[in-house]
Image (tube, rainbow, N blue to C red; front, side, top):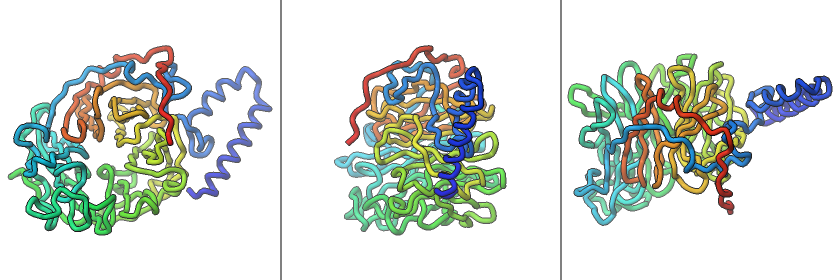
Length: 430
């Protein structure tokens, strides 16, 4: 949707609402006002509502996150670069190591995890992708490399463990279950900045007989996704795309991937560079088959932004700042088998602590927020559902890959408070 159309919709919506106020009896207005809070592309496109409930303060950034209700979970560590000998396989102990960009899948009776693993801090020269598997999501195999070493960027390279355009890195991008196969996606580019001009999205195919991965080719040039493709009602696959120059060109969505791995069309989301500095988008399919995309804002507004598509990802409404608070961190949403939605994120605008689970009946407004894990830096979540259980991978301080198992039945038994969980004011953003 173009900006002009969106503006026209806003004006027409306002006129309809004012007319309704003049013609509707006072006793009915309150019900209409309550309904008008919910976002709608045509009748209420500018609604910021994404979080609601009697427990919610008027200023949602003032939620007392430490007092959020807890939900029971089981915990496991998949990989830890701080361990003796470093499970990351990095040879330069002085530079330490990194584990992040965590993704999960359930395939062929096994759980699979993948993540970025490299020297020093995140995304330096020589970073590769690792994987592990598990039968129950708690006991995991020893981590192994999924990708080869980046071109001329192994531990013997003079640029290993640095940030320079003379060396390359792989970044973990998620599992894609396509045509009965399990593919692992990973981006490859120069390691100087985000991102290099040689940016490419690659696929690696699981060979189940040997539990190894073979190169399946380039999925799309000049693209990094945020989560793997999801199938639309049209039969097409869709995933987000950031080009190497996305900071000026904005976020796009790739639609296709049916006839071949590398056959896609790219569609822009207008406003992702003017209304906000859009980062790490996620999206899901709404009950009426419209699509909702949500964006992290690198302007540090401390809130998530949302856009809607009614034509299967071809055009999008101008992103609107919601009332859902955010630590300027990666998040992950999922539509459950029962039709509800969950969002795992860092909603505390002060820091990436805690990690929470929000639940929504319609994919637009979340009415429940539960405390998962915290007391330290916890981020980069990915959530999947299997047989009524949520499996949530996350990173601890960008050095561990960890797992939570959360029963949806346990989450449903936890109630939210009846009064606002009011905490201290949020920090002043400069």
